[in-house]
Length: 130
Image 1: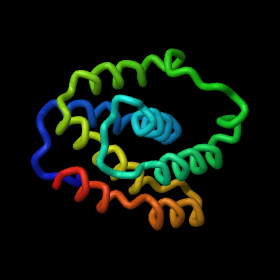
Image 2: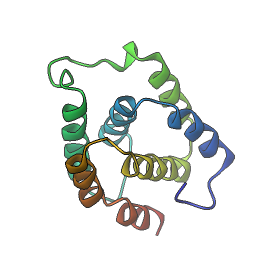
Image 3: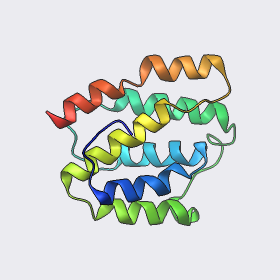
Image 4: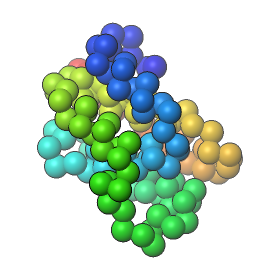
């Protein structure tokens, strides 16, 4: 984990997140960053574009199929738990989630380099927790 002082709720939810497949981690991250009730003092459009590009690369059917979160019950359960968090816990979970994605080995050097250069998770963390 990137942050030292996460609440037990964040740590517990992150344990469940950590067991997701890489494609589901990306789907959840895209959904949470696009979610209209997520108030962030950071421009995340470049993150969303990057995550969609990575997901499209590792799951070629991603762009062909309209995804419904309701069809992914394990993600819906994570979303339900996340929705109960207060503002600071939501921000901390987002930081930890993006840091986890930042550290994924996608088994593709170019994809790993793309993520490492463009997913500015440290800047994101500093901006959210200032």
